[in-house]
Image 1 (tube, rainbow, N blue to C red):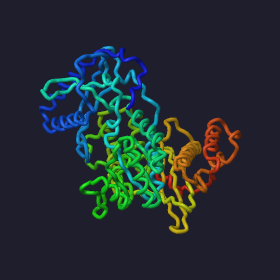
Image 2 (cartoon, rainbow, N blue to C red; image 1 turned 135 degrees about the vertical axis):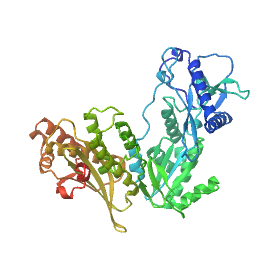
Image 3 (tube, helix red, strand yellow; image 1 turned 60 degrees about the vertical axis):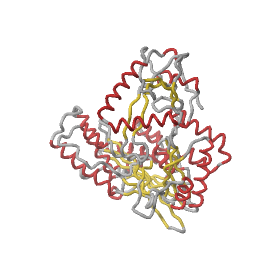
Length: 511
């Protein structure tokens, strides 16, 4: 149970019922034109009431009430909830203030998606699961229920006031409260289930939890500890996925799922932190809508198409950087959102779009090959041109049993600034991007890296980096100081431009 973290008195809120009522009337009109939407909406809130996640409010009003307008979000491809009702905690009252305005956001407890992806790639065997109705498993103190009211039809088909009794999606503090409860659960019960602590501290992202191990037996032990720890806080787990069939079978059999996921048929895909993951073959796949944007190409349609591709690790940067370059050019031409592009720009965009479609053939291994008794080397490359800067990291794992394995770890690209710089200065800026990426990888991978070697094809920037920064003027000195501070143990070396893999992104020949 939690309290809503208010930073101001709820007495500052004015009347909100009328706005919520108008929103509800709008939903009723939408129901008339879409019976399927209407039924899904009713089913969702009926379940809410049956689970006592909302209760009918008493007629007497002892405290100011805040009414949350609500609407439905359809997700036809969802395997569980086709429609989710969301609540608007930012709806202003008659005083101009909303519930979210008088509520603290809370500390940032959420991990970044790339942090979790790095951690998940360390292990040979992994699992993913999510907490069922995570927010709704956490009760809100009854004294705060009047700040979470909604309007809905009761059993007599009359519009009535209901209290939402659990943490509610759409309120500012909801993400903080949910994760804070998880951390408290670890503090209270974690000593009983120690194997569950790493997945909950390093492998959590919103309501998804990821864990890994180097053996199937250890992975199974972790899943059991995780289930027990979460159930100690009343947080059931579902939607299990794993590249270990034995672990998955154990979990699904205990959960009595009638049709457990099979690894014998075609590869079953699932989303892992936004990436498409095939557990059976254990690789990432990139999926983008192949449908045409329409006959007229505008900045709006182009950006909509680009936004479909989610690549937090930068595994397909040589393609995505071209789209970034074109976007920068559109902004320079000051085109409006719906103004048609020129024939030349349209042709270039069509070429990029075809390359984006071809990414469906790109497969990236999930596991980077790290294991006990292996020597791990980190190799980074940087490059720059007048169009873009790029940095890329590879992990080289040498093991007596499996030999050497080279894996693309991540990359980062950036279009060059509008203020033109010389190539050596751009190369130095690219080296700084690489230094920051390397420093980040050392922190997040949380494993012993035996050697770090960073490569550049610029002899000028290499001279700058390997010399004392006081020798150079401000632009160079500031960047060299940062590079040396970020990579104190790294060795900087020269690589020819033809052998520099970062050049694939910075100097695209077909651009």
